[in-house]
Each structure stands twice: as C-alpha cells, then as structure tokens.
Amino acid sequence: METDAELDRIERHIAECGGAARVRSTDRRTKRALARGVACRRLLRVRNGWYSLPGADPAAVAAVRVGGVRTSTSATRAGGLWTWDDGKLHVAVPLHASRLRLPRAASLCVHWCAELVTGANALPLAVVLLHVAMCQLFENAVAVIDSALNKRLISMRSLETAFAGAPERCRRLLAWCDAASQSGTESLVRVRLRRLGIAVRTQVPIPGVGFVDLLVGNRLVIECDSREFHDKADSYAKDRERDLELIRQGYLPLRLTYGQILFRWHEVEPVILEIVRADRHR
Image 1: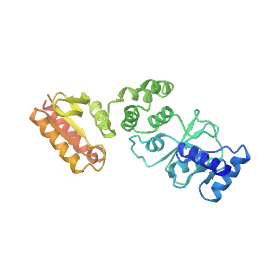
Image 2: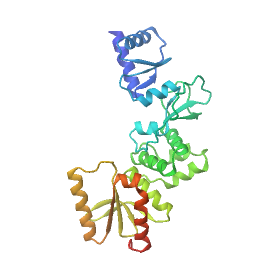
Image 3: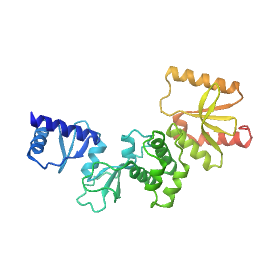
Image 4: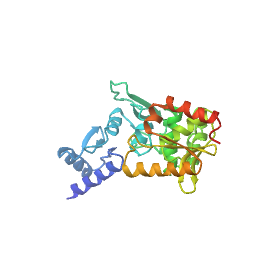
C-alpha cells in the first residue's frame, strides 16, 4: 500500500510536469515505487533519473532524451498558446550540459540556456517566450506572445524584465505586441498591416455588432478566422448576420479565412492596399 501511494504521487508529479519529468530517488520507498511503476508499465524510463507516463507528448519525451526540456514553440504549443508549427523540436539544455543525445533528424533546435539548471523539469514562461523571439519569424513571435498576454499567463512587465539583456530585435518586438488580440491570425494580420504603414486598431466595439477583430481607418472591418475549419452552421450564420449589420451601418467588412492568412496572403494584401489607396477605408 505504501508503494502504491508513492507511485500515485510520482505519477501526479510527472503529469504536472507535462508527462515527462525527473524523479529523485533518494529513499528506498521511492526506488521501490519507481521499479514497480516501470515493471507494470505505469512508468517509462526515458533517461537516467527521468521518467514519463504512457501516452505522454512525444515532444516532451524526445526533449528529455536529448538532455533538456521543451522550449520555444514546442513548449508554447503544449501550453495551449497559439503557435505556428515550424516542424522543429525545440529543446533547452543547460549551458554546461554534456552527453546530449542528438537525433539524426535535422529538425532539432537546441537552445543553450543559462536559466535552466540540470534536472529542472521546465522553464519559466518568460524564458520560453524569449526563445520564441530569438528563433521565430518576427510576426510569428508576436502572435505567440500576444496569445500569452491575452490569456493573462504573463505580464508585459515580466516580459520586459526577461528581455532586458536580449538582442535589440527581441526587445523591439515587444512594442508590437497587443494583449487585446484574440487569435494568432488576428495578430499576424495586424503586424503585416502595420509593417505596410497602415494604421489598424484591435478589438474595436461597434454598437449592434460587438467587438470586431481589426478596424482600418473608420470603415474597413477585417475579421480573421482563428481556426483552419470555421464552418459550423451556428458560427457561419452568426458571422453573416454580423457582416449584414456592418454593411447596414456603412462599414466595409472583409472576412479572411485561416488559409488566406496563413498560406495565401499574397492574394489578400493587394486587395487591402487597393482599398486603402483608394481611400475607401475612410
């Protein structure tokens, strides 16, 4: 019974750490529980002193096998933040780490991290977001940080402190972030338009409609689908009702799909530029 209780405690600890964690076996009770957990397949031994739960996120397990923990987009995706998948496993390792088990695949990005001590189960979110800023495209990094701010998982003050010694590009990025942004696609469009010199406001309230994603000038409303599949009947009908009311009030609504924003922006940008140059957004 004592061993079962200890094994339950270990499983809870590993689950809280994202499915893979270091377990310090400093007493016989813990050692017996670990041995039993591995024997009955309730635990999997990943690396010396590190264990995972069956069905744990493969990225978390792979990061441990390398010799560190998930960071950058590998960590933000697991944490529920909007994240553009760059196809890489991002792993933070201590500065003086040795015996790294580097996979043959070229999809690994190692972040040598002074904030990570050997054996730590995770990094602070501020450090994870700093790694995002350092390795991702500017607009993608802004979108991830927007997501963290919007979910109130971190404050801008904490980010400014964490970014204080970072390269200028990373510090400059914070000025482009907006906690009001409701989705990554909205963040991407906002950043792209501002880079073109187009003034845009985020989450603007309009009577009879509610909040709209973006407002360019005082007339062009841009709504951004936040998911690849945005075709539920109730959402579809509600979106069209909002568009109808916007038109009735004299606005020019432009609804962009997830695919148009992520993969076909080259078709969207000229349309927006034409509207602005013709002063139809005013």
